[in-house]
Image 1 (cartoon, one colour):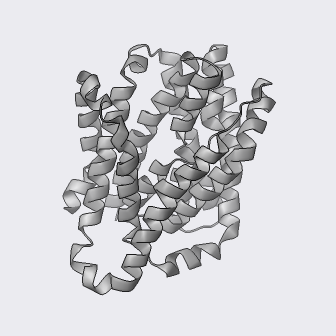
Image 2 (tube, one colour):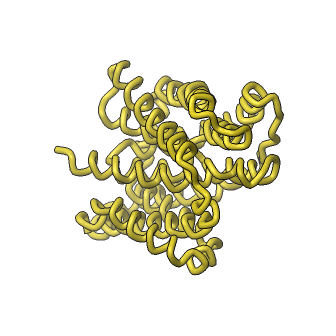
Length: 300
């Protein structure tokens, strides 16, 4: 099972190619994305205990550092790259919406596969989502001179249903019955891997039309934006003498944005073209994150 999990990037890329060639088939399964994410979060909860969260709550400084990188540097990088690569106003808008987003749920999965601090990753996602309620409108006004209303109720409901409830359910079960469940613990990384690979394939199918219209500058902007997030997300905690697990966790959390929200906001308040960076980011950050997770997972 461990070998299958370690080859996560390979499965993700292969199924993405298949999904691009059979877009309609995979796009028809859009409704199972949320249940699959909930399954992934439950599987992660089954590897955690209450003590893991208690230990993380004693580290408020690193959560603050991650949030600062998320909302200070990522929007700045998005704006700078858009100017440097001479992107259109619509594409710049899409880049800014991605840069101003909170950490995505997929970051928790990649952190899990990369042997990071999963409890810390989950709390960082929750905290950054709460901050995004106020900061996304503020940042879009600062950089674009336009206020973008953020669906507060929808975001909080998603965090509750997709992240909190499944993780807490798994954690409760594992905290009380860990000895009895020890023989099946290896199944949960495999379940998470299969679920996230299928989610990536469905996302590729849903974004087939957008991917057909890609131009080199926007591809380069998205890849560089994600790479800068990985670099600074890892480098800043490392400079501050945090241990390897925490550096990995912040790195992944900062670089993997809630691109689904940015796509939804772009379509509702701007244009289809403005949704292109978020659509591409939703695919690319899963692939780059999974490759990095494979490197860290197999690193001695």
